[in-house]
Amino acid sequence: MRGSKVMGIEPGEYARVDRVDPRENRITIVRENGAQQTYDPRRLSGVTVYHEVQREFSQGDRVQFTSPSRELDVTNRELGTVEGVSNAGNLGIRMDSGREVRFNIREHPHLDYGYAVTSYSSQGQTAERVLIHVDTDKGELLVNNRFACVSISRHSRPNEGYDNIPTLKTLGIARL
Image 1 (spheres, rainbow, N blue to C red):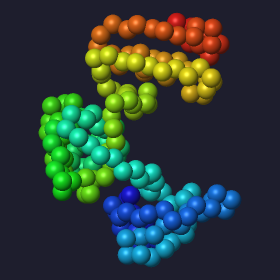
Image 2: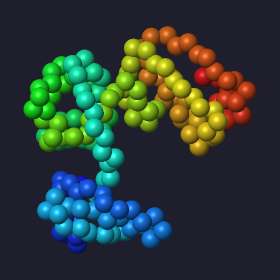
Image 3: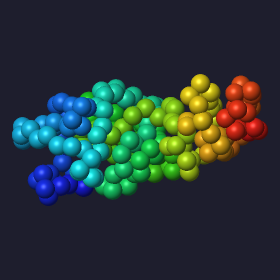
Image 4: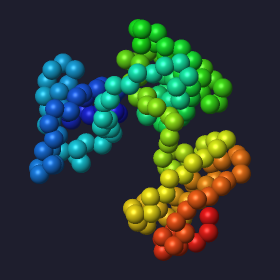
């Protein structure tokens, strides 16, 4: 978070979502000091809400960063492989670029498994092999020419395609 002078929130501060009122479009957070604040998220820019999930990483796991970090010099959705894990939460990750990153998961909790990525987050990446799941029931808002172009251009080896041609044609993706 970039912070908010109006709410007195410092840059980089974390808070836990306590309640969500969708009818009034209000969110109530509990800050690290225990104070509660309720606000309309449309009126506060620079805030990112994450769904906290416990993960148990092991040596050899593929992982992706789910938030950028200047301190670690990693970008959002950057991929790597876990090389070491300690009981204290220290991780060593070999990034796909070859660089090694070391940190404690409590200090940078924005890490998830990286065995599968979305078409959006794969932009700018190259993979040896790519498996693309095209859910043609989702319609043209999710399955379109941009999605197809990004998805099929991530590989470094020849593609094999298995598709539902009639549905793809109705979505304007005549030939991949």
